[in-house]
Image (cartoon, rainbow, N blue to C red; front, side, top):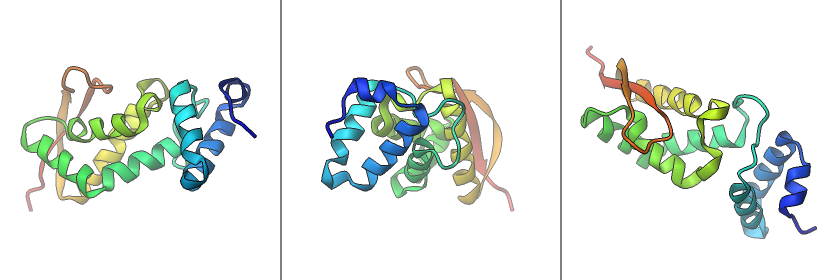
Length: 147
């Protein structure tokens, strides 16, 4: 069955999320085409906020916990920026229009970043404005935990 924008529009957000996750699992068997179509459509994959099982949440976790994700968060922190400022460009590059504040996606990303930073031995300091052009408007700042 050929997937189209009209078929995607007729689906519930939750059904699109399931389709997206199934396509991700079958990336080499045509799944990438479906992922690209869903991403290009800009249609939501959820009707409320993000759940822990949501494909967008799971992908943000993968990005944040990756070696590159952790490195960019620490680099941003060392530069005096919110840790999210380091990893958000990776999230945007990967998720495109699926990452936005309307479904609390930026709040969820900040929560994931907080888990990673605490794991890396940092403690919360404050909140700061994100750099111009960021999707999130403000985010937490961190410092190495004093033992």
